[in-house]
Image 1 (cartoon, helix red, strand yellow):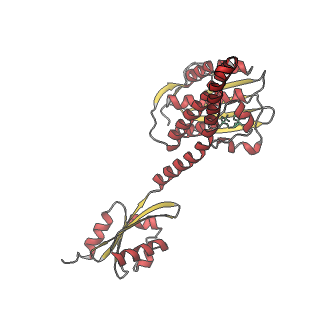
Image 2 (tube, helix red, strand yellow):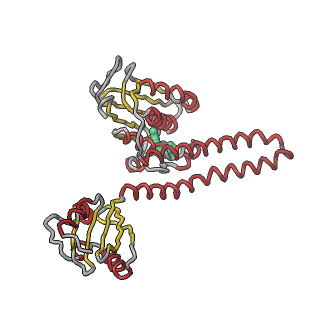
Image 3 (cartoon, protein in one colour):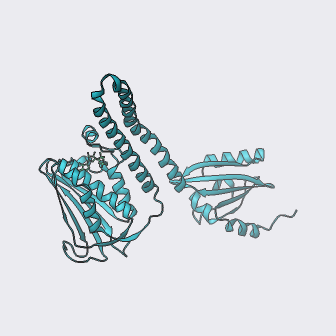
Length: 348
Ligand code: ADP
């Protein structure tokens, strides 16, 4: 069989969507396409003649040597210039072909999954162990001390509720972290806020905290109803929980183009949601960390209040999914303000 002319080979290699490098078994470079140059970090003016000019990582040179010796194809993953690359090396007759794919995105998702499994299994253990202990206690007392049964059932229900909240938060967070496509629809943020506040009326009463809403009658934005609800729910629940009896929470919803507007319809422009409490506040050094998953300033307090430690991670991811930002300002003993900025309808 006759060898293809060099220009034909170059054309072929350039047409491959992945990064592609073609070498002779003697180590001369026959062709390198643009994608391979970019992934390997080779500048257009770099002289590329010998295999060593393209095999910028020792693992690549080793793989080429192995493939030329054995004739068997090899595939490997390696990190280069901040990217995760998958490189397949194979022999085509007496030439060596390297195909390079950028797998950074897939690798990030794999890593997220691994981290997720590692720290969630730890967090799940506590409520699961409590449920087991309570169920065992129940089976013992049911005959000998029936008067203790209602109390154990109450505690069992509470732990099951905590486990269920944790599982729901985990599923929401995973969905948001993976950043898949989002269902967007026009919706009224002011109305959504009023509904969330009504749903948390009991919590506010229990904590003796007064909640007020300052919003125009209607404020249209484009977004995911479920995710915007999660943002408001979590910020409000925290503002009530990390408060003191007699304290207050003020929620302000306004259009960035008309700040402070209280009445009427507010279409377009940026939208601001502020949740301001008169609660326990946060030390300066904690302000960045509170958005990390499972981070709690006071783990003991958070546990007694039933917090999962995931609320603010969910808020941050949901806000980012909408192309918005979230900021926090706080004074210990005085209170905290979370400010969410979102693109208005038609601006996202
Ligand atoms: P949790 O389920 O523990 O409330 P979050 O992710 O919602 O988890 O919040 C993380 C931590 O940030 C909380 O444990 C709490 O220490 C702190 N925090 C959140 N919101 C407030 C707030 N409004 N005032 C004071 N501290 C807060």
